[in-house]
Image 1: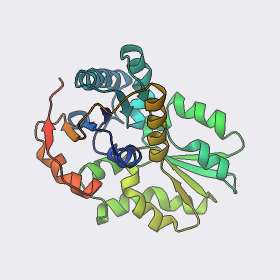
Image 2: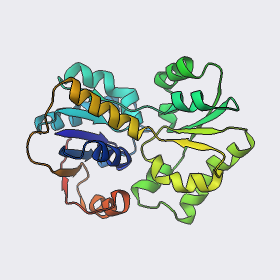
Image 3: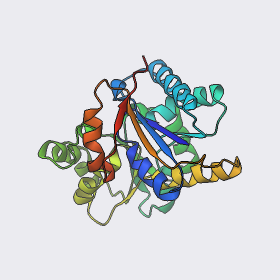
Length: 259
């Protein structure tokens, strides 16, 4: 079983890519909505949540774990790898391809403040963007709008425009998305930036990495094919309401408190 988790519903953008790449595999997706968003939380809190979620998913029979959250990957993937004896895939902003393809020598990264300020992003910039100027911008309020299912309303449009529109004067030609919630706002972002600026979503690369690890470790799909959805919120109804909107079809959602 492939296990995935995010602070909330943003990792469903990765879920779509993983399902497309590995259609025979059962997937369990956990949204830690009781603690969403992770961005304002301390590193210690995020690690604590990661370990609780990771151990729970391992107990449910996970063969591989995908941390479908940039903030959780940045803060907690080392702790997860130290405690869990299964392959773990993290996610990071698509800085490498965006920088490699830039013609103007200027790109932007959109992510949470926590991710943008992290050592991981600094390492990516040093390794892959030495000759490229990278503008870092946080999508304030974007995670909350996706969680609420407000993908195209006037408030969401205003929040996206406030961050993205000033970039049009900066001569950038690529934008790397560094939060798994943000691809759900890609239509709005693209509407603002037009066809001259390319968006990079790392979801497909994560799916390919998961497929490679499954092959390397000789994992099998463990029989029955199913999709399971879990929230740490007390009420699962809201997540169930959002699934058709975000992944195109309904599924039952379980509530699992991990405190």
